[in-house]
Length: 126
Image (cartoon, rainbow, N blue to C red; front, side, top):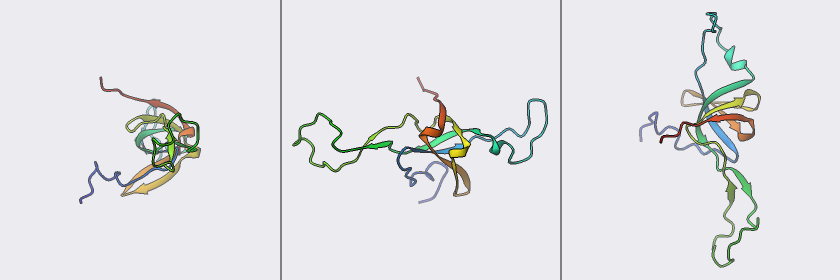
């Protein structure tokens, strides 16, 4: 199987309440026309990027009190999750201090807990 831009993230599994973010390319020039050296934008406290993968969410105990009949679910050890608010494709504004930087197949990504995501911008296709 050839690795393409579309399928290179398929084998990545994000754990728990974390999201995988590809940072948005930073502007090299300020509004007043000054050019910034590399790395200046990366040191900002708040960053933005696109969510590429999302973890399953916050795990909850199996006996959390769901109103199901005991005979209705044969697999009682199945882990259940409270899903995350973030979705793949969202633009995320997040705190840089909580992000873990990784390089995967030549691209830079950040693994960020949902608690460090301050805001999401979602473009819904109507």
